Image (cartoon, rainbow, N blue to C red; front, side, top):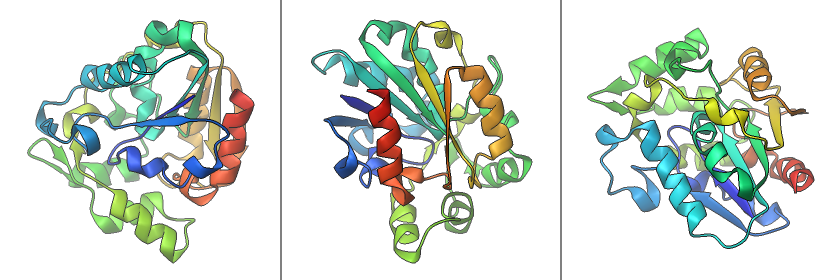
Length: 229
C-alpha cells in the first residue's frame, strides 16, 4: 500500500496522474484545510495537526508494509510520524522533499527567490499562491495541458506552517528511506535537495524533472516507488 502526502498549496488531488501507474493500492492524504478536511480553518493548522491527520488516515488502513511518500513540504510532516509508524513502514520516499535543519523554519531555508515570492503571497495567516508565481515554480517543465491541470490543483495553505519550527527526530527511526532528487526543479532547487538528502540519509535517486514529477513523469516516479516495495 502506498500512502501519498502532498506538499504546500496542494491537496490529495495532485497525485491523480500517478495513480494509474502504481502497481498496488494507494491512499492520497488530504492535510487539514483542504480536500476532505476543508472544514478545518487554515489559520488554525499546525504541523502537529498535519501529522495527526496522516496518522489518522494510516490508522484506518489494514496491513503493514506501507510505502510512505513525502512530496515537497511533506518533508516536514512525514518525519513527525516516522517513529510512531515505523513497525508498519517498509520504506519512506522523499520526493524533492523540504527537509530543513531540525528546529529551523521552512521559510528560512528555501531559495531566496522562492522565499520572497512566498512572503509576497502570505497575508492574514493564509498562503495564497499567485498563479504566475505558481507556474514559474511548479510548471517550468510542463506542456500547456499539464500546466493548466496543475494550476487548477493549487489551493490556499496555512502560512504558520512555513514559520513553525520543524521536528526531525523521527528520522532516527530504523526505516529504509530514499530521497528522489529532481534535477530540473525550479521550486526546491537541486542544491537545497542535496542538503535535504544528506539529512534524510539512505538511498538517492535522480530524475530529470521539475517539482511536480508525479504530473510530468508519472511512470518514472512509479518505477522508483515500485523499487521501494
